[in-house]
Length: 178
Image (tube, rainbow, N blue to C red):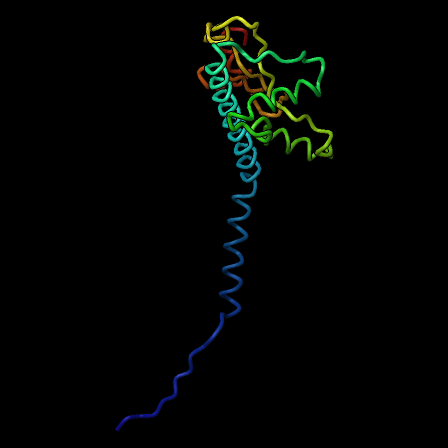
C-alpha cells in the first residue's frame, strides 16, 4: 500500500540565504571597488596609446603618399587653424577626430567641469618637420607625437616613428636624466 504523503516544494529563498548572498556580494564589492578606479584609469591610458599609434599609422600613410614630405601646417600659435589642419590632413586616412583625443584627458576635463566645446580638439602635438623629403623618418629617436597633457601617472606619452609609445618619465630614465 502506498502512503499518500504530500510533498511541498518550496519556492523562493530563506532569509538566511538572502543575508548570506548579500554578505558575499558586499565582500566582493569591497575587494574590487578600490581597484575599479585603477582599472578605469588604465583603460583610458591604453586607449590613449592606441590612438597615438593610429595617428602614427595615418602619418606614415600621408608621408608615403606625398613623396616622403611631412604635412606642412600652420603655426602651433594659431590654435584653431592648427587643430583643424591636422584633423583634415589625416581624415582621408581614416583618422577621425576622436582618434586625436586621449580618453583619460577627456575624463579629467569632464571631472573639472570643462564643457566639451571648450576642450582642445587635439590632445597630441605632431612634431614639425621641414618640407624636406625623408626628414621625418631619418631619425628613429625623433618623436612624432607628444601628448599635450600630463594625466597619466608617468607623464605625457611620446610616440616614435616606429609606433612605440613611452611615457615621458621612461624616456628621461633611459637617457639618464632621472
